[in-house]
Image 1 (cartoon, one colour):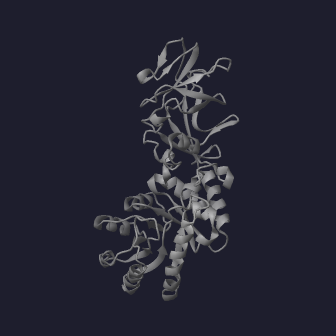
Image 2 (cartoon, rainbow, N blue to C red):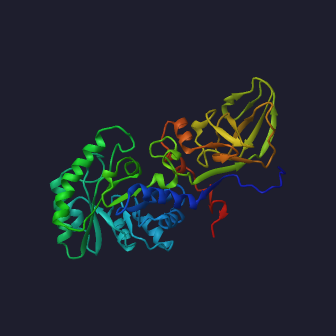
Image 3 (cartoon, rainbow, N blue to C red):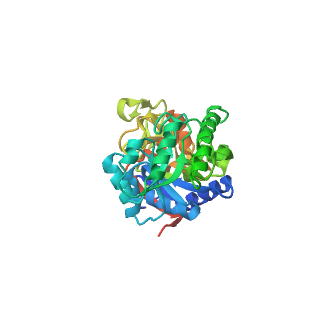
Length: 376
């Protein structure tokens, strides 16, 4: 390809149509009568919060969830009017931001309820085993719910919990958590009819319909990432994000010559290296040094040498077609008959796929499209 062909050094291409289809697929998994809340925290898991939220709503989500009050405010500033639930803890100033954004909030302590001086919709959280937010005392959670219901300016909107091991099929702990929640929430809803019960994240949604109750909170799966860390296609999901760059330089390497900081790749025989101008400053983690592939010309090319802040080098195997400056390079996504999933990066990095899109930096431009057609 001619070096004059315009390329960008690091672009995340986000297929909004894939997000819509993933949400529709998850709605099918829940069955009738169960609503879907699309989780768009952490800038939509790195995909872009507002575009992802709009796509999720188009796909059948009825509400949105974020972790922080500021994230709710950003969605409102983007013109999104759907119901929003702030899942995280709130300081006094953050509470005001959340309420200014007309967001639902979560409570589990009576003093916090007493500090809510403005009209608000409140969900009460029981900690059934995650060990983070929420109270472990079911009696206290009931007192909090009663306090919310008794306050004339507050609305008791929901009761919730969160699973610690939903993404580990075959474990017994999710069932224990579900039993604890059901034992508390059943009598609570008898006291407060109309209370919305919700417990399921993406993994629980796909794993067990008994966790669905009135609403599921799906995050990772709506972006086409597998909550079980295998292959999203196993669940009919499509990865929405691809990470693209290009070949900036091609040069022969003689035996004994090296590439990158620390000379962590030294050629043992004549070969050719292509430099791709993307690095850990963009989210390509340094631990992928000599531990990843890049798609060029529809073939996997091994990453050679240290991942630097702004560049990686890739070996073009002898006998394979040479790459040219300007050729497209795909770090995550598909090219030809090959594909590299975020789950592959996660395995190589000994982490989870959530970290991969969330780790893409601000200098990676997000480009939105619908099955290849630029989003208006």
